[in-house]
Length: 403
Ligand code: UDP
Image (cartoon, rainbow, N blue to C red; front, side, top):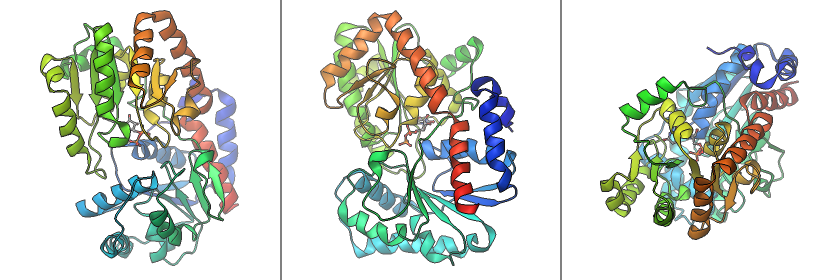
């Protein structure tokens, strides 16, 4: 287990002292985080680091993973997509499946009596609040881009959201029309996790060999679930343009999250689209769930791309910036909180394949530019997007609600 003091060298002593100060009135308080997957995606990633740290500084923090079957997760993925603006065919059956799964979960978990504070992550377990006697503050921590939600779904979800004491979103623009208390908290990465820690050359060599990743040509990499919002097919198009000017390889790495059943279908489409390049070895698709592999890929790549069409925050961008890599990413959602165009990375219009390819080529041809962008990117993350800042923000919320 990591100690908070292990972060001293990275964030400095003041940050550590401030966290201990904020924790003082919270010793022994029981907090529970509930989300819907233990692996894959940014939420699981953050809980894996933040829950142990909360315990280390004197709280009792649990992390409970919500249960649902394949149909449930297919539905909640549709709800997730609708919250990001998609259409949805909203039926009585869908409502029943959503509510019954939440009701069933409440039958074998006793949140009511056991906790001083409940934090619900994302829409899957949102309705749980209806199935307990509410005897403590509940927080809905929504990681999704809520700027233009589908109205039918949003209106339905309000039936639950209104009961919450606080809604936390990742971006000022995701505040909505609900007359409820909002707080903006930006996500963060753990610089000491397997995914972000420093790696020696030997480990990097071992991984590139094991996962058969040739390093004879520059690598352009996108690390993201196979999801339409991450636009892996668009990445292939961009790569084809780059390839006309610079010989390079593209790596698409996307593990399969248990709460995202769409992934396999999209992966198949990518395979069809890039077949010729895959056969030649110039496009490499990886679907392993392996944090060190992600770390290695981010370190050995010449450019990291994040061609999302929508992006709640985009932890993959943060991770790449932290490794001092030049990032070319879409000017959407939370990515704009992290990248200042031309300063610590490049922002591009996600529909502008040509412009995106040009930025990648520019970086590949200019190592000094690559280094300068990367250096500034790392500083941005050190100042704003590390797990210690996230912990500190959560402690503010707890003090406010429990103080
Ligand atoms: N991730 C991973 N393996 C993969 C693809 C993604 O570990 O093959 C991780 C990635 O490193 C990041 C998280 O999943 O930590 C994705 O978070 P992000 O905010 O970028 O997107 P989300 O998946 O939550 O929409």
